[in-house]
Image (cartoon, rainbow, N blue to C red; front, side):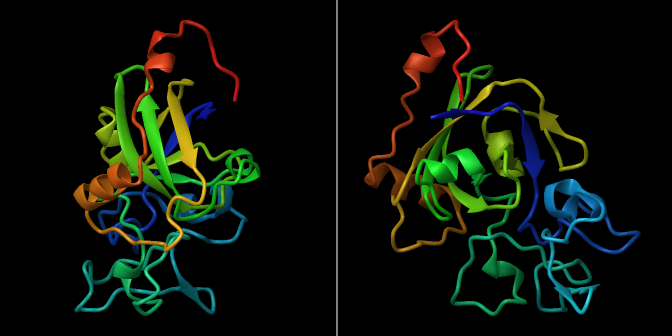
Length: 207
């Protein structure tokens, strides 16, 4: 189990995550760069020869950029926004270096607990690009009880969130579009939301 130092809101994969000036987006363009560094490569949305790939009239959000996640539905074309995990609909976390060392991989199930709100939810590991792993989808943070609305400068700044990883728990890389189906699948896999040891502890756990 890993206790995060903080948890930033990740909106990648949402059809309305990023777009041109004048569009009401969930995040600002600079946050689409790796580790949110201005000069780092763009990882939050798809580009073609340096230009953003824009959604067409038959896509979920025409005119917005095609936002990507590392976990994908391989049955759909790369430019289809539905290929990626929607941060506004699915609980997901980012794969950090520590979790990777412990055997976690993209697509695995997780259980995530907020000590502040005494809430636990199921999710998956759906994105990468931040070595700390201290990022979770907008839907995840909302499901845990945080009143966030987008990815613009919103984060849990305390060490409040615990993530239990289940390595190799999704060997077939089952893709989810509805949280209810993810929850049902996680329960069948034996993923536990029992964080009673954390809830009872008054001491700070080490990562």
